[in-house]
Length: 275
Ligand code: C2E
Ligand code: CA
Ligand code: CA
Ligand code: CA
Image (cartoon, rainbow, N blue to C red; front, side, top):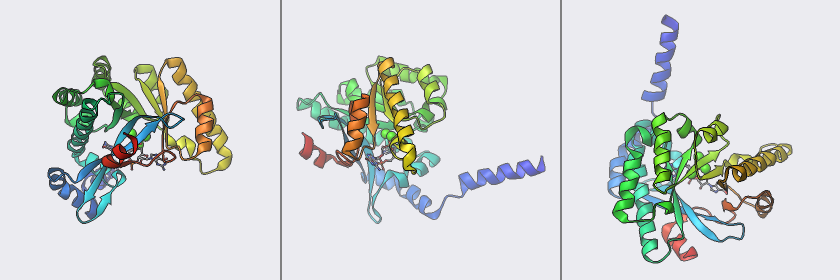
């Protein structure tokens, strides 16, 4: 027992108890930040190859009073680890639903917003109940709220989560697998579960060795063909050049999200530019 026991203790204490000072500060700042609405929603457009707007993904930013604008890469993981993430996600979902309600009242019921759902959200709240009650409160069309879930979230989930995804789809929500192809079980996920949209992991567009890019593009090509066979929509994320878009459009991709069209921008700027 001795040696392994010590190792496992060391492992747990490293991962759970030894947060860095910076992480502890972010966690300590959380309640106040949420109460003072320091978190805000940026929108990144999703468009056709011709640049016609279809909708947007909601991406959170933290306008920190001392540290300035902080990106999710610096806090999502810490909030997932500490169980705060569900409160942040609920807040972002509400911002998205409020915005959709406003657009729909103004006659723009053709636009959707995609929101991110963290794996950890399923542990801490009833995601189905939370989202459907937001939709009822603000009276939006359910199909205009897209739910982005990573394949890891789906595959590490229980049967309960698969059932929940079915319930969402039956209630008219669109469900999307985010970062498709980045996990260990992409095809298993598809086998076991019906979804509406695949978003191809942007890692396939970036290879450190240029001679591998062709292989990577064939994988994308195969994923796109698969979505046709299964009757799913497909989005390519992280497109930065015209060349990429031309290639992907030839392969049959219809929807794009990436810096070539726009970075994520504050809601006001999004509305000024696109609506
Ligand atoms: P994600 O869901 O895969 O979102 C896409 C990320 O790629 C965004 O980073 C976006 O700004 C970036 N991106 C988009 N187009 C391009 C491009 O052409 N080139 C490059 N290099 N990057 C591009 P961001 O906003 O920093 O978010 C990072 C991750 O943080 C997201 O990855 C998502 O996993 C997580 N996240 C963001 N907002 C939320 C949220 O409200 N809730 C949860 N749970 N996670 C969130
Ligand atoms: Ca996403
Ligand atoms: Ca993604
Ligand atoms: Ca991601």
